[in-house]
Structure formats: structure tokens, C-alpha cells
Image (cartoon, rainbow, N blue to C red; front, side, top):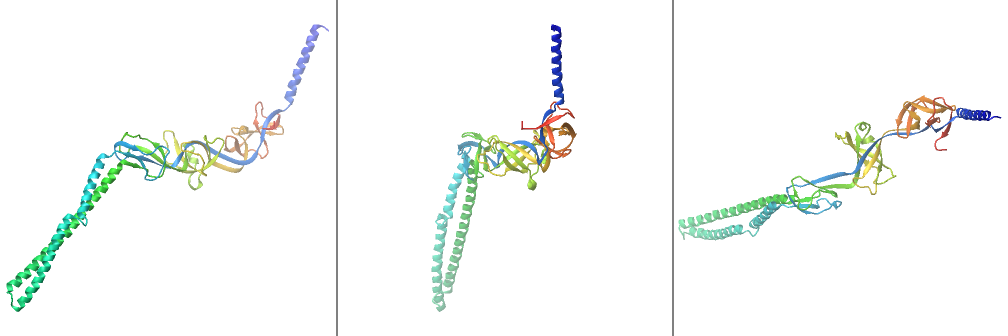
Length: 394
């Protein structure tokens, strides 16, 4: 056989082999990954992020403008209601209080049982009382003598006048004692009221906790000059924590609070791989106009040990839920069409979809329970022969 004929023979053989391989591939079905259409729960959720915050917190402010003399707590300290947080210098009011207390002490002494002024007046009244008693005795004796004619009528009249004069003087003295006592008591009470007011003003330098809780922020240092109404501390009750979510305005209308509140699935960077549940407790009416979002408060269904204020949370707010829904993998749906295996061939079909998440899509119309949905249709065309392989079994 000539060399040329041998080359042609080999060429024919190679071409025949290629044709055979192509023919086999054209005849052999295309392997596709599928998943069966199943029934289950369809859930639609809105994603949001937020932070852990105390349910109640109070910003403690300065009532006066002066230098900070003392800081009594640190961030993280637990405090009780009324506990001293800081003290602001208040020398003017402190001096006024000291002066007022001195005057009040004097006024109390003047109005008390050992009052010098009242003692003098009461001594005068006592002396008049004794003179009046003696005058009455002498007047009675004079009346007896006048009845027998032993003394003249003029002496009897003088005796009676003496009694009347002393009686009037005694009544005036007793009235002066009563008046002085009332006046001294009024002065004492007025000074006591002034001292109480001065004490309140002097105490304005004492910054105390308005509620029990934890000091979250300390915003001043000793020696710093503060102004009136300046924020000094933030104290929060950390016994109850909430999650503050920032929800886009496009999604807020689908969320609910109150009796039919939306449920929330939560995760935290601090607790990887764990999921927690919560419920929307309140949707704040005022939006963040810059971020175009609303603040949504979520209450935890159960306390989480180790959770702290400021931790970052990721949330999926459940806005729709449907049981016994017909579900297909999201990869099987392309717009308004889904791909299925029917009689060994790939069949695209118009479907009506419902709830959709990142994994599955609800088919409201256009599919049947148990059908095989094609989840990987690369290289597959409509009507092509396919060999279905359930995803995850290869």
C-alpha cells in the first residue's frame, strides 16, 4: 500500500471516530441537576441592621454653670437612684446658705422657750399679775372698811381705780407676749423657708442619678468648666434591652407592631452561628430624613446571656408567612418562567409566583407537587433531552 493511501485511510478513520463521538453526544441526554417541587412554609422577610440599646436611658445635665469639683463614678458603674455622680462648685450659694443657717439658729432661739425677749415680757406680765392680786386684796379690805364708814368714799374709789389700772396693764402685757411670740415664730418660719430654698440652690451643685442603672457615658472631667444644662452623664437601665433597627422607608409599611406584631429573626456578630427571636414592640413615627429610614424597636423573646449595649445585630423581619405552599428552588425560576423535566425533556413554563426569598420561591400556579425543577440549566435548551440528577446525590 502506498504511503498516500495509508494517510487517506487514517484520515477517514479519524473523521469517522469524530463523527461517532459527536453522534453519541447528540443522542445521549444532557445531565441536569434537579430538585423536586415540595410543599412547606414560605416566608418573606425584610433585612435590616441595628444595635442593642437599653429600653430606658436618661441624660443627666448640669443645673448650674461652674467648675466640676468631683467625679464620683466611672463608666460601667452601677448606681442607685439619688446616688451622687459628681459635684459642681457652688461657692456663692454655699455662703448664702451658711449665713441663712446662722440667722435661722438665732431666730429659733428667739422664738423658743428660753427666748430672752419673751422672757422679759413674761417677767413684766408676771409682776403685773402679782401687783394686781395685791391690789385686789387691798380693794376688798377697803370695801369692808368703807361699809362701816371707817374710810372715806374717795379711798374706795382710788382702790378700785388701782385694780382696774393694773388689770388693763396686765392684759396689755399678755397681749404683747402673745404678739411677740407670733412675730418671732413667723420670723423663724420665714427664715426656715429661705434656708430650705437656699439649701436647694446650694444642692444644685450635686449631680445625682435620677434612676437606678448603669453609667453608660461620662462626658466631663474634674476641673472642667460646665454650662447650665450641659450633658454630664448617661445612665441607663440595662435590665431590659431592646434592638433598634433602621428600616428603609420602602419596607416600613409592611411591618406591624401592637397585637399582631411582626416577628424577627436575629443574629449578632458576638454570637456567630446562633439565631435568636424577637418581636416588634414599637415603630417610631419620626423618620431619619437623611437616611430615609425609620427606627423600629424589637423586644427579645428571651434574655440573652452576655449581650451588651452597643452590639451590632442583623435582623430578618418576617412580613409574610404561608404554610403548605408549593415551593421550588430560586435557581429554577427565571422571571415569570420556571424549568421542569417532563418526559425526559427540558420544559420552560410560565408560572405565577408568590412569596420569594433567597433560597425558594412559592409557585401559586403553573407547577405540581413532586415535579422535578431544573436548578442548573447551563447548555440546556427548550425541548432538549435531559437526564435528571437530584442535586446533592452526585
